[in-house]
Figure 1 (cartoon, rainbow, N blue to C red):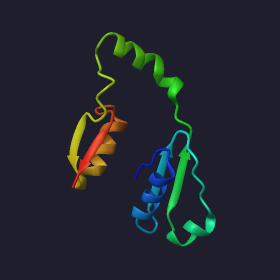
Figure 2 (cartoon, one colour):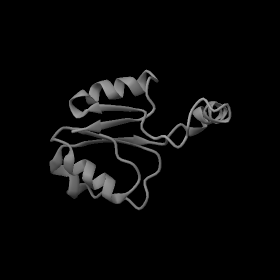
Figure 3 (spheres, one colour):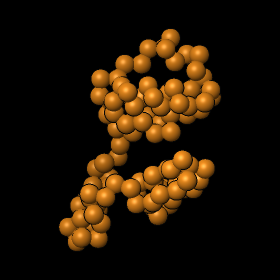
Length: 103
């Protein structure tokens, strides 16, 4: 599961994850406070860190400049939720930028 930025997103992600599940976050959290006692018994793993924006920004700006990608388009692949692993594989292999999972 991926959570970005807000306290509500983090809370929803932690509550939606199964016991022993993983919640990943990339980038800066905004006003998120996680108390140990609130998540201790969930057995949920939290993983996160800064986004490597500077690594990708020059290439992305060039692609936008040459009109090879449309920065206004957020999701470029839609899959049923039972194919979530394929969605992450597509993003990892750069076949998709952002995947929308539908129930």
